[in-house]
Amino acid sequence: MLFELQDLRLSRGGRVILDGFSARIPEGASALVGPSGAGKSSLLRLLNRLAEPDSGRILFRGTPLVDHDVLELRRQVMLVPQLPALLPGTLADNIRYAARLAGLQRTDLAGPLAAAGLDPSYADREAAKLSVGEQQRGMLARALAAEPGVLLLDEPTSALDPESVAAVESALAGLRHRGDLSLVIVTHDRAQAARLADRSIRLGATPSPAGAL
Image 1 (cartoon, rainbow, N blue to C red):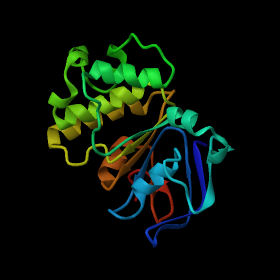
Image 2 (cartoon, rainbow, N blue to C red):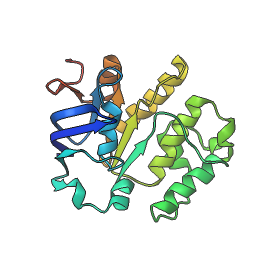
Image 3 (cartoon, rainbow, N blue to C red):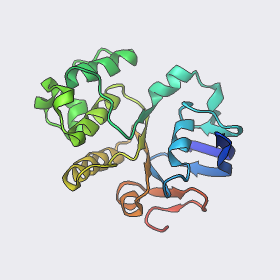
């Protein structure tokens, strides 16, 4: 089991976001589904300790999350945020930077780019000059360069035009069946969850197979 969430409670600013929430997230591709304000993004941040629950416990592959070194955990369980946040410079600069943070010497730029749905010519493109959809795929490429075991994706197609949504979804569909990578995708769109995940978990509801919500 990838993650086991046990009786989680989380509050922020006096507002209870999660209250006694439990679920099991298996290896593979899973979606966290629900309307805005349901706590999806907050829950995602708990999975690599960018936030901590008020109470309850999370297991990562059978071991309590708090027992993992936090920096090593974030190399293995990497969050791709909702809004692109590439560093100044080229995509190649971003990819090499992520690899160095993970202690890797990466000379292969084409591999992460291809996995993110970008051809090798994008390596030398300035990140600031890319479209939002291209930047989102650039974020995927940068994350993949660190060779994580899990990608946490927070509304990866939010505010994109239909063509860019299709391109990002195509890249994620390609990653979905990689045996060395699990995906946890936050979305408010049930149809997208069915397209991209094998299993959906609706906050406040009993976990159910993707497409069966």
